[in-house]
Every structure is written in structure tokens, then in C-alpha cells.
Image (tube, rainbow over the protein chains, first blue to last red):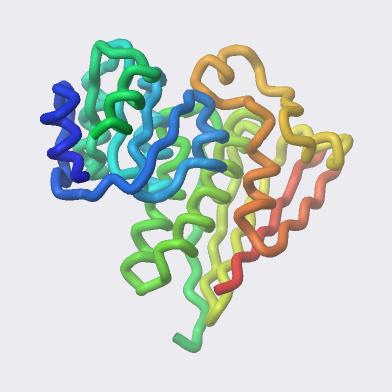
Length: 107
Length: 140
């Protein structure tokens, strides 16, 4: 499944789309950044409610396929700008992390 | 590649937003010189954790990365408070990070364990009141 497929099927809000054709090969849920860096894998869909600028750095270093902000957590324009500069697929939804993962798995 | 390639960065001590700039730059440069993706991931995550530690605890410091054939060495040096009990600091979940740092998603006590996990060798030299130098080596 590509990031484009995920956006369409889960009806996600696109904050930044850098590489819609990127293949999603797994997933990880977490807000503690060191846990994400220790456990998430390249190609994962990373679901989080964290929205500070460090999320973009972690997404880039771990090389996740996309970041999905759950529960429509507030995000500032500078973070979206940073995602654009670093080529990170940044998406958002009003759904909870639980529901997002549930729906993704059923695809 | 016969001569080692060296990168040097100053890590700004009071800026959480720019913490990680050096790691992201290293990632980009390693990609340009054709280092395998998994090696880049290990180096840049280990370095990022170290950078964050220097910002949280030591008001910044210096980061040096040396690329040799089959080996990348990361040296992070600060003049912070030092680590009194390195074994305790290495324990997963142990953290002395303040509350404002935790609200950003850091301070989970996983930084040093991650640095060790992602590198083939990690050496911590620390003197209380003088500073800490962490030397990490990634083989490939």
C-alpha cells in the first residue's frame, strides 16, 4: 500500500505530501521519541499525537514512510514547513491512533 | 575512499528546534557518498540521541563524525555537568531530564540505551563538573 492509497482509504488530511508513491511496509504508534527511534522501522506508518518540530527530525532519521497525526492534534505552520523542507509525508486525522491502525490493518 | 572524511558541528545548547540539524546533515552527506541506508540510519539516530542529550544536560557541545573505509566514528564532547553513575544512566527508563523536555517527547530514559543499541562500540568518558565525551563506532 502506498501513502497515496492510505490518504484516500483513511480520508486523511494532507499537511505535506513529498512522496505519495512511497510504499508503507509496517507501522508504529508512539509519542516518546526515543522509543520511536528505537523501535520504528524504515517504511513504517508512524502514528503519533506529538506535533513539535522534533517529530520531523525523527521521521527523517528513522526514514518512516509517513507520519500520521492522530486526534487532530494541533500543529504549527513552522512544523509543516520543516516537513516540506525535509521531504516528509505529514498527514493528519480526527481519528484516534487506535482507530487509524485498525482501519489501516483492514485495508 | 582512502583518506578519512571528517564532519564537524557545533551543537547549540539552548535550541531544541535546531537539535537534530547536525544529524540530518550527516544523514544527507553519508547518502551522497554512498553509505548503505541501514548504516546511515544507525549513525544518524545514535548521533541525534547524543545531540539531544547535549542540549538537555550540557548546554550544547561539539559533534565530530569521521568516515573511514568500513567504519564511521561519532565523537560527541560537552562541558556539561558530567555523569556520576554511568551504569545507572545506561539503564533503560532512567532519566534526569526536566519536565519541559518530557513534554516534547524526550526524557524517556532511552537515549543512551539507543545509542548503544545502534552502534557496534560505545565509550563514555565523563568527569563530574567537567564534561562528557561519548565515542561511538559503527562498522559496516
